[in-house]
Structures are given as C-alpha cells and as structure tokens.
Amino acid sequence: MSSLDYSAHGAPQAAGALGDLNRLRRLARVWIAAACVVYVVDLLRQTRLGLTDGVQRPLGDDFINYWSGAAVALQGHAARAYDFLGFHAFEQSVVGPTLDLYHYSYPPVMLLLTLPLALLPYVPALGLWLIGTWYAFYRALKAASGEGVLLLALATPAVFINAMLGQNGALTAALLGGGLVLLERRPVLAGMLFGLLAFKPHLALMLPVALLAGRQWRALVSSGVTVLMLVAASVIAFGLEPWTDYLRNLPILRVAILEDSTDIWRLMVSVFVFARRFGASLELAYGCQAVSAIIATSVVAWSWWRDHPRHIRYALLIVGTWLAIPYLQHYDLVVGAFVVVWLHTEERRPQAPVAWIRAAMAAVLLLPLVAASIGKNTDLTFGPPFLIPVFALLVRLAVGYDRAQRQAGKALTFANEPAAN
Image 1: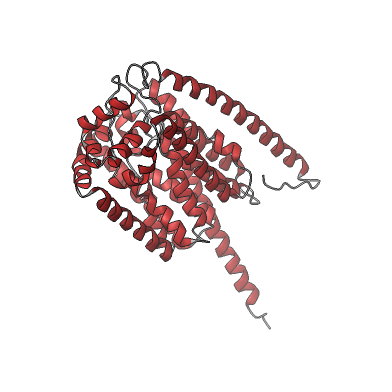
Image 2: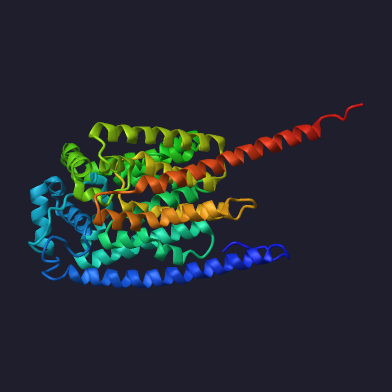
C-alpha cells in the first residue's frame, strides 16, 4: 500500500492508518469467506431438478444466455438467439423444463465473442467463464494499481453479485478499466479493448467524448476500426438476419425491461429507474436521465480537455457513464474497483480530503450490495444518492487541480517579473 510518514508528527496518523487498513483486510477476508459459502449454497439450489432450481433459475443463472447463444450460433442457427420462444425451448433442452423465460439481448458480436464457450459442455463452460473473466479483471486491476490488489479483486461486492448471476460485469470491467490503464502507454491496444465493448455499447457511451476531448486520436481510431471489424466478422459468420432480428427486438426489450419491468428494476441503479421508483412518469424519468447525462458528459469532456491527472479523469469517465445511462444493473459496477484504486491514488496526496475520499470509496464498493438488498425487499432503488456525491467529489478534486495550476502560474509570473528600481 502507500508509503506512510513516520516522522514525529506523522507517527500517530500513520499508526492509525495502518490500524484502519488491518481492520479492512480482516473484514474483507470475512466477507470473502461468507460470500463463498453463500455462492456454493446458491449453486446447489440450482441443481434441485436437472440444472435448475425446480422453479425458474438455471445453474449459472444468466450464463444460460451466453452459452446457449453461442451454441445455436455454432450450429448455424444464430438467428434463433433472437427468437424468444425458440431460444427458450433450446435453453430448456440444456438445463431442464422448469426455466423462466430468459432472453438474448446482446448484438450478434457477442455471439462471435462467446463462440468458443460452446465448444465445451455447459457446466465446464460456466467455470471457464467465471474464472476467466474474473482473472482478466484482476490482471487489469493489478496493472491499474501497481500493487497487490488480490484482496480487492476478490472482496469487491459487485464481483460476488456478478458471479451469482453468471454475468459479464468482470469482463466489461477488464475491457474498460484495462483500456484506460493502457491508454497512455499503448493507445492502439487500449482502443481495441474499448472496441470489444461493442457487445455492451451503452457502457462505452463516454469513451468517444473522453477520447475526443483528450485528443487521444490513435485510441479513438483503433476502437472504431475494432467495432467495424467485429460487426463485419459477425455478418460474415452469421449473415444479416441476426442483426435485423436484434434491431427488431430492441424496442420490445426496452419496454419490457427498462420501462415496465418492476421486477428487474430492483437490480438497477440508474437515474431513470430511481426516478420511476419514486413515482415519476415515463417522460419525467427520461427527462431526469437526460439532464444527468448532459451534466455528466459536459464534466467528462471538460476534465479530459483540461488534461487533469489521469486518475481523476478516468474515475470521472466511469462514474459519469453510470450517471448517463438509463440501463445500469448492479453487476455492471465491478469496474468500480478501478474507481477505488484511483481514489486511493488521490488519497495519498498531501492535504487530500481523506475522509471524503474514503466515504466515496465505500459508496462505490457498497452500492451494489446495498442496492440489491433494498431492491429485493422494497420497491425502491438508491443508485443516484450513492453515485452523485462520488461524482461531485471528483469534480471538486478536478477543480482543485485547476486552482493549484493557476496559483502556480501566478507565482511563476511574479517570480519572473523584473525587480522594481
């Protein structure tokens, strides 16, 4: 972790920091142990009848979509992934008849990217998916920190939620966070990682804004070329039919999942769903989301144009994305571990508002767990009350860097002025 000042004045503060760190480590280890027990018990519940819980959930939950989509594509029937009833029947043939209606909501580039999963039987593929995507996330997080982050990579609550649901949060975190880590040193590779987010494009919403404002031309071109190549490859592999079916399904899914599905709302942490849960009409909720998106986009563009320290710019991009998109689930917040690492970088700076930074780190980490608990037991979701203060703190830190630069410039100008006769 960070170096500590053990001078006569700094010793008590350093000792306190070490004590806090040791307590956090113990708490993290207890959480990891408890989460593992809960996860194993939940997996066993999902094998009561075949590879289902006998009611509606399959083993690996949403992973059934990824594997089944890849499987029908490998069989030469990619368009079947976008046939709701036909796809459901195929998934039932994989895990058993007692299965809720799962749907495939990803563009055909996801079929292409997950195709290797279908080369394995379902259960080994699930293990490969969870371990492989987590390891990619861990390696990217380690590159971001330059320190040992294994405990953080395991203890981040969104990682546990992502594993419980068999979801892609670790993969999107590896691509977005890893791309940001590589941006300064290897912009072309960073752009390629950003381009791979084409399977979940709303999570890349802020990237064009940031790359344009930050004059990151090579990464911008690389990401665009990667997206075009993925789309072209998917058309060559599967034809145009899956794309037309996917585009036809989008309005149906928008209404069913985002606008009318109070059941799925309990998993969401966006401004739009927050407004809807507190009684806003559909139009007002979209209006709130639009205002949030405009503010977030403006701030991200300003920070990248001003070339603020990279840890501030990167954290603003991620939190700004969260505030800008209406469809944001709690498992998408795995990438929040990178925000914690970058906030920790700021925490080391002299005169940093340590208490506020630590509160922001806690908010980012705990939001997925708190949101899931509240959403499961009430009709409310509380994403924005967690995210807006974090975003505001990052803006304050960026403004502080601007102020410090202006003061340094004035001091340099004053020092260079000729002495009065």
